[in-house]
Image (cartoon, rainbow, N blue to C red; front, side, top):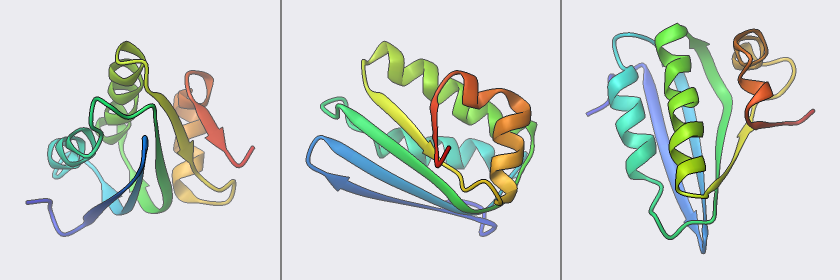
Length: 108
């Protein structure tokens, strides 16, 4: 069960899965959040998106989730897109961490 400070929702759409995360991702729940995300992406997918619009806080442990996810999905040849609006708290850490250099982040 995920710490109640974060919620992960996955919606499969054919060969694509859309994942939305809300709340805070930090040391207390990062492992559970990562497990929820990775288990939501089946091997037959060709693409996945992770929407961080409703994420209010992400620490460095939380960011590790996304760097690991990029590596795992590249190995599986699954395209990943991260959605983080320019004014969102998550976008700031996405840009500072350099995640935007290794994965498509929208909107630009």
